[in-house]
Amino acid sequence: MLLSVAGAHATVRTEAGLGESKVGITETYRLNVPTEKEISTTQIRLVVPSGVSLTRFETAPGFTRTVTKNADGLVTEVVWKGRVAPMEYARFFFQARNPAAAGDVVWKIYQTYSDGSVAAWDGSNPDQGPASTVTIK
Image (cartoon, rainbow, N blue to C red):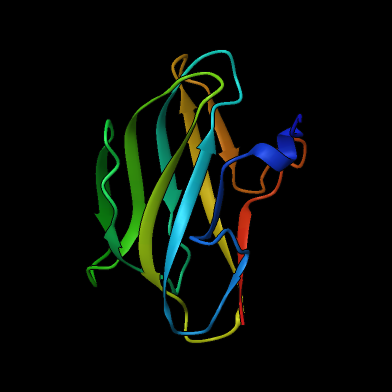
């Protein structure tokens, strides 16, 4: 089975693979990152949506993780560095508290390849595909 580029790009979903969750709960999410080029992915950067509080991460063997926090100590960005070879994908699991209000949360993901090129899964390029969105109900 072949996946379209739009269907295969980097996404954030619940651990169960759902695109929706509940207001105010702590949810386990998975960031799924397939390598879609003939060269390796070397870095994945996730921008945390406003109102979402990341609380912990599952270890990801072969990857180093750094976080950026704001003045309030909340994680605003996560960067994983490692290698995802062509025809492979990586999954990164983390826990987060959902926003207190219903609505869509948009996860912006930036995938860097070994040649330095970046796939911006942030909705800025309609040809590349939309940003990953989870609906909070």
